[in-house]
Amino acid sequence: MKQPCVYIVANKRHGTIYTGVTANPPKRSFEHREGSVKGFSAKYGCRMLVWYELHETMYDAITREKQIKAGSRAKKIALIEALNPGWNDLYDTLI
Image (tube, rainbow, N blue to C red; front, side):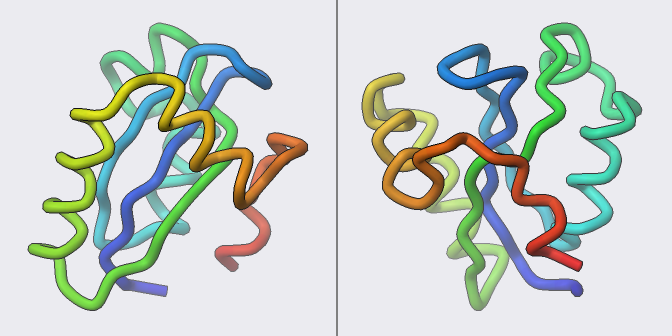
């Protein structure tokens, strides 16, 4: 599945979260799960896909990512819990 997507990965419920954007959600989520994405998410063990939002264009996805990153942690948690109150790993919903 290739489609522009904004996503949030976490290391545990209410733990460290990372917001990103990708054109290939299953591949990127797999990379996070395996810890092969170097940087913040690997350093803090953010491997569970806990939230995502698909977009029509990469421009729209990037715009939304910036909006989410500019928001507070509380707003990010509210986004996650509206879609995924159990903070389950949503990887299997992508494939």
